[in-house]
Length: 428
Image (tube, rainbow, N blue to C red; front, top):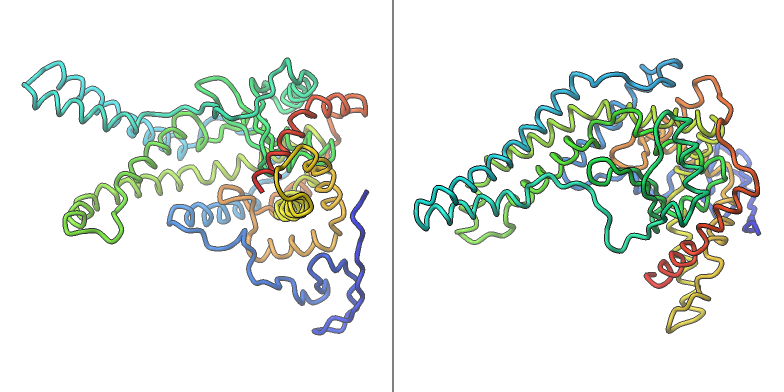
């Protein structure tokens, strides 16, 4: 059942225009933008802590705007060709980073083999100990990940395979579901593909929007996002480890202050390399997001891809609604949490999200145009992604589901839905 609307009618105190709005959401004036941002700048656009995140957000907005202006209808629908010059340089820098780690390993082994008494052994062990945390780390599943295998969810995997074929790639090897209002793809090891579906986001989408979500995520495998490739991605993590070890000690003693001073130059060097990789990969990364959006449209239709963008604008409401539902359930039944306390959680979330009026979507879109709202610091501004989808010729869906197929997939997810709903209520 859809949440009840609470209508209020009042004149705008700034221009006098009649405002008809749902009082559960921000009451604002579409004519003059009165009360567009009642609390000031939204959290999603607040200043990030850390220079690297600030740089990443600034580049995301800068290149997102440039690409929105540059990408034409034809280019927005095509997949990129070979790696760009900036991507080649980023790849070369990543190889140098890994070469430093390899040098530490070779040097450590040489000192151990060469001997030189106890001093050589100590030096060799030190170099190997230093190389170990800096090694290229391939992604792997967390021990508590809720995995759906092909045997567990054959219909879901079949849908994923169909969407993958529509966007020009292959499907995934593993699906994980979790409690985040998000979705992502990555590689496990060298070749296995992982798709992570956050049920809070999945549950509030229509079936065509879910297909668009799958198309977007699988589209990342077709467009060569350098930043998330194995070589450059592992170099990022290695440099991040270097930066962590070289970070200055706060409120240092005299000895620690000397160590901080010694670390200053290598720390600045590592920070410079991280910033350089950001500069080299930012444009390709932003372009890959636009192309992934185009893949979503090819698979599910332009209408579904635009609908997905609108849902992404209001993902903050997912967290707010879940918090309200969880708190209410815990207050009604204090003490031990059982499966009964989690029943209906997803339905309550969907009802609320379906009740969000168009005026609230329009308000957030206008705020986004002011401040460049994006899903995170790596994505182009959401209103530009939506605008580019609307700029090109609308396309019909290639992949659809009927009621029977939808029900079978829902049945495959039933156990995970119940378990994750209970986890959300227990974790408050």
